[in-house]
Length: 224
Ligand code: ZN
Image (cartoon, rainbow, N blue to C red; front, side, top):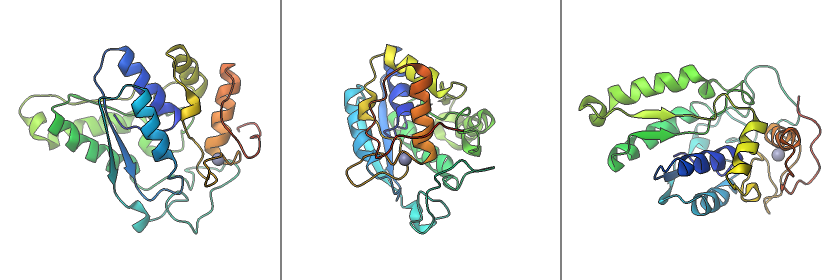
């Protein structure tokens, strides 16, 4: 299970655990400016009942090309047209490829990823067609696949709204105070309240009717 430390992955873990699935969590130290999410990922994996948690370092800042991995590109504070500059080139493909390798080592038959096409519709690697294509690749690319152990990519949140994710997670007892969404947090992990991730998160809690436990430097304006 890919666990970023955000609210989607915290919910993903709770859903799988509620279904009786043994979960091994993987997070990536990829040169992201919001590196404090890794501390959140550790908390989420531990409290969420993951059987193990691994942090893999892969420095995508050496490629750059995103506001999240290149310090010279500012994190936008308003919604943009098209694919946002917070898109990290091929990130989910890189992450899923490494998760696929580990899954094969673990003899796991499922890889769970908390992508969401509704709120992040600008990201090409969060779409259902992408997940289906990666699953095809996973079964072509691996010894497990060739020898008949099918690997499934599970993305149960892909069609959910942020409010639906928060409502379901709250029912399952997820403590969203452990999670970090902000792309541009302060060193003490306080959320900026201005980036897309902060605005979408705050709006999700508002629509869900659930109190938002996030410590924002400034309260986000409504998401667009
Ligand atoms: Zn933010």
